Image (cartoon, rainbow, N blue to C red; front, side, top):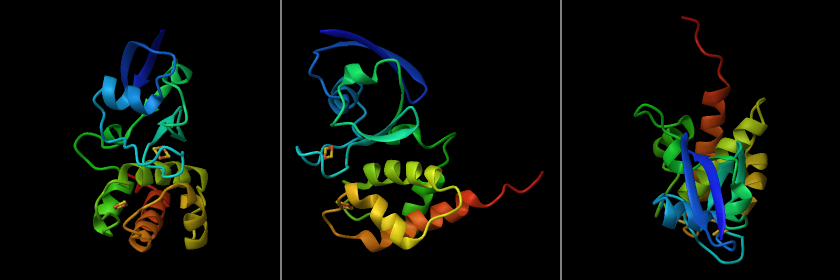
Length: 161
Ligand code: FES
Ligand code: FES
């Protein structure tokens, strides 16, 4: 067993887990954060993407013990003060989801992608960057539209008060 502690969505969490416990299972089964999904057992689908210290990670590829001492953000931690994160708002606005199973992972990957391309994104880059996220409904067109819209919204300078 391993004693672990981490900050999840701004809340300090401690636990005792079997050494083999994956981060995704710690989040879902120990913390009840079921917005992070498991869509495969081959590390291919991306439904499990969360942020570990600000970077997108497939949480099925990481042990919970490896994330000990880190800051973890899941889809449940993106909205602030009752307001959707701009990427969540863009997915809603542009119909970037169908069954929704892949959506949390898509959104977490998109937030990280937009952070890494502060100068903006184009369609080719978004499609290449989303290679590790599979939507089985194959609704990629609106997902790409949503990511581009969010990238544009987030790169606009804030209006001075
Ligand atoms: Fe992690 Fe599919 S569950 S990549
Ligand atoms: Fe259904 Fe992506 S919206 S798998």
